[in-house]
Image (cartoon, rainbow, N blue to C red; front, side, top):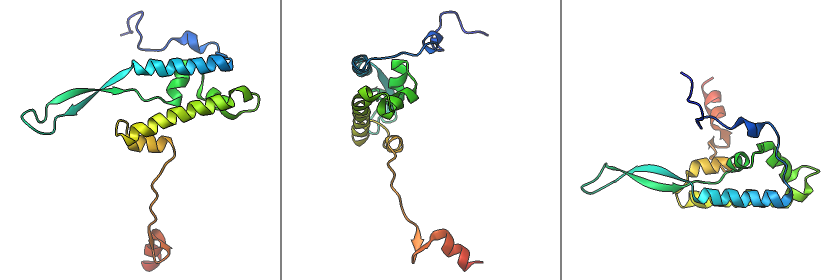
Length: 152
């Protein structure tokens, strides 16, 4: 069965037909507009009450929407590659500082949200390339080397 006419399940394909071009002032204004739009957009997170007479009952907790570079790109009607170009490609020098600051704002909000346990710490760490590396060695040998040489 086809989707009903006028539904919003898909996307508006008209926005995909022609690339948007922004002046640096318009690019900046679009980012401010994006951040303001996020203030009004909340998700409802279900969480169980952990103790008391109502333990186990699910309650709704409004949660802010975290900003991301990709969601900003969708909002602005540009590709992620365009954002990367504005950030560091020759010919876009007027956008360098502004776009780097946009990334810094988004990443700082994500990191602060993770520190406050509002956003997933693991996901934010992965998005920012942060890892907790552990070395598995036995007397200077890699763990795999120690077992393979002993049992071969």
